Each structure stands twice: as structure tokens, then as C-alpha cells.
Image 1 (tube, rainbow over the protein chains, first blue to last red):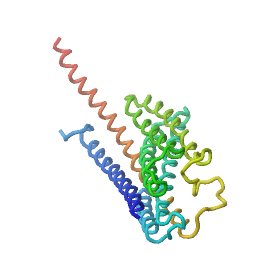
Image 2: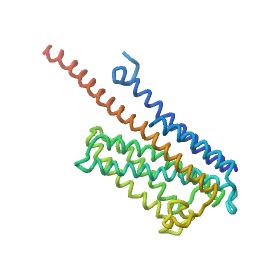
Image 3: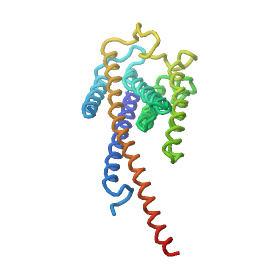
Image 4: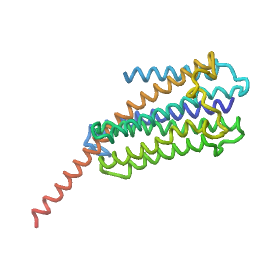
Amino acid sequence: MSYVAAGYAVAFVTLGSYTLWVLRRRRSLDRLLRTDGRPGPQR
Amino acid sequence: MRRLLGIGSAAGLTLTAILGLFVTPPDRVMGTLVRLLYVHPSVAWVAYLAFGVTALACICYLWPRTRAPFWDRLAVSSAEIGVVFCALTLATGSIWGRPTWGVWWVWDARLTTTALLLALFIGYLALRRVTVDPGARARRSAVAGLVAFADVPIVHMSVVWWNTLHQPATVLRPSLASPTLSGSMAWTLLLSFLSFTLLYGWLLMHRYQNSVLEARLEDEGMEIALAERWAEAVPSGVGR
């Protein structure tokens, strides 16, 4: 059963992390485009 | 639409985990290890699907009549998701292989061609970072995407063409008329396929939107850099 749990954990944790990364990237791109279009703090 | 996909996939995946882990019966031969069946083939299917969408988008980009940035962005978005699912296919397969075959990895035809597929699409993503010009980048990566996709049918048919340790396909098999599963196992597997596919659709929509924003950022960054260079050049030119 530990292999089964490991399989589910690997799949769900990886997909959850990737989903969060995509959403956070979206938020950071939105923020960058609202400022001056360049990475870094707003001037 | 996007919200509906998100809610549908989250609910479906939760139900898949509950049914797969606690409700479906153990297998006569594999015992409880059969519960990995509700994760491993579904993530492999989504990897196939994602790379298939990438190949289709690459064809549409290379075809002069349909050439548009949309296809290039769709191709890269789907390829990235495909790489995540392909890596998961190898990881979950390896976890299943250890108690079944006694080894984490074996240079079997199915495993080797899948590892090659992952390497090819990582190469595709890496190639996109090499070229700066958007037109050349899209053209070159479209060709690379098609070359990489050629491995997908080889992966799928590897269990038929060669003698492998990996079992033949459970669902996507040549003779669909003779199912290898029934009852709650079949329904849970179907739900798992549907839920992971919905998740793919939801991720693709978000990832595509990120590609659009990245392109805008690239354009704006270029405009700002040019404006700054002009601003630097004008006073020095006046001074001479």
C-alpha cells in the first residue's frame, strides 16, 4: 500500500505544484504589465 | 468555461482518489497495487494528448494559410503541460514497477521510448530559449515539435512491436471490443481519464494566457529598451 500512496502523492503533489506555479506566473505577469513592462520594482 | 473546467477537474480528481484508494476492489494478481491503474494510464494519456495538440498546432503554424502566433503559443503551452505529465508517467510507472518487477527502472522498449519522448520535448522547450527572433523561434520549434511527436506512436505501439516487460495497453488497445476491466474498476478508470483530461484543458487555458502575456511583456520590454537607447544616443549626437 505504501507504493500506492507514494504514486498518488507524487502525481497529486506534482500537479498541484505545477498548477500553483502557472497561476502565480499569471499573477506576476499581470503585475509586470500593469507597471512599466519590465521586471523589477515599480519606478 | 474555465471555472467550470477547474471545478469539474478538481471534483473528478478528488472522487477518483477516493474511489481508487478506498472503494475499488484489489486485483486477483496484483492486489492493492492495481490502484495505481487510476493514475498511471490517465497521466500517460494526457501526455499523448498534450503532445498531439502540440503537433497539430505546429502543423497549423507551418502551413502558410493558417500561420498565426496563436498556434505557436498553443504549441508551447501544450508541450510544457505534456512534459509535466510525461515526467509523471515515468515517475508513477517506476513506483509501480518496483514492487511488480523488482526494479525501479529497466531499459524496456516502452520505458526507453517514453524517456526519449520526455527528452525530445524538453529539447523542444530548450530550443525555444535559444532563438530570440519570435518568427524564427516559432518556425524552428514547430519543426522540432513535429519531429518529437513522431515518437508518440512508437511509444504507444512499443508493447505490440517488441517483447516488453510492460503489460499491453489496458484501454487504448487495438481490440476495443474486448475490455480488460469491468464494474467499479472500469468506471473509476473512465472517471480518472475524464478528470485528468479536464485538468489538462484547464491548465492549457491558463498556460496559453501566460504565453500571451509573456509575448506582450517581450514586446513592451523591446520598446522600452529601444526608447532608452534612443534617449542615450540623442544627447551624445548633439554634443559632437
